Structures are given as C-alpha cells and as structure tokens.
Length: 197
Image (cartoon, rainbow, N blue to C red; front, side, top):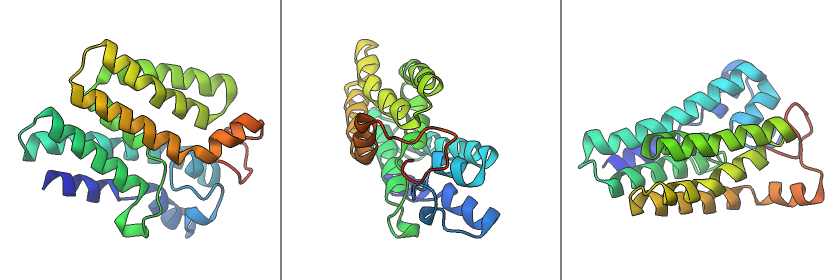
C-alpha cells in the first residue's frame, strides 16, 4: 500500500500545475517539453522553477517516510517507495504518463535514505552546473556518484542497489542530453533555446 501511495504522490506534476496556474499552458508543449524544474525555470522564471524543484524533492522525502509510517520501515520497503515516487514523477498516471526526468525527486529520496552521499554528490553537481551552466551534466554526475559514495560509506545493500537503479533511470531519461553534450550543443542554464531540459 505505501508503494502505491508513493507512486500516486510522485505522479503529482508540480511543473505541469505551475504552468496551468501561472500562464494557463501545458509546460510540456514549451521549452524542452520536459515537466521538470529546469524547464519550469526556463519557461516560467526562476521563482517557479525553484518552487517546483523543492516540491518535487519533497515528494521523494515524503515517499520514503511513508514506508516508515505505513509499513515496517525496512530498507527494502523504503527503497521501493522511493522508486515508486520517481517512476510516478517520470510517468505520471494523472498526466498521460508524460512527466519529468526525476532528478529533484531522486534528490529528496536520497537525502532521506542516504543523506551524506546525497550531499557530497550534490556538491559536485552544483559545482559542475556553476562552472558549465549545464544542468543535465550536473544531474548526470549526481546520479553517477551516488552509488560510489553509498558503497564506500557502507549503507545497506538495498540502498546501494537503489542508487544503481537511479543511475540507470537518470541516464536513460537524459540520453538525448548526453548526445547534445558530446556534440557540444546542449542548452545552458539561462538560455531559452528549446533543445534541452
């Protein structure tokens, strides 16, 4: 039951809702077409983008806590609730299964399951974005470093396996961004081109 609730919670698209409430648009038809914080920032502005980032992260935090409140609190259940929230964000049942890329929700899940690895990977992510203005690069580095930090800090094997799933999710969802990064034409933060997000 907590896993189902976590998926339904993850399916709440704050980016989509922000677009409808603030401009009466479907944000998936603007900017990069991605229903996430980066595209929200690009289309609606910095304030709405940060709000969506925080709300999407909260979905991940609450999803894991649901496993503690409604379940046995075991590592496997917490991980499955986190996966369900990310799946919900990426493929939301309420919005035709067209969602975002799950990074903000992943941040919330990992901050709850493995705070220090999430913080250390987050610092690298922020530095990469600050240096390059490529949000996608920061996101990819974040998910790539999570399994390494989780492993060396000796978190439960369930959390390590989850970090590998997160890595696979993120890199699959960012496959077009990876191609553009290699080609050198990925959109930078602050640009309003329609080819990234």
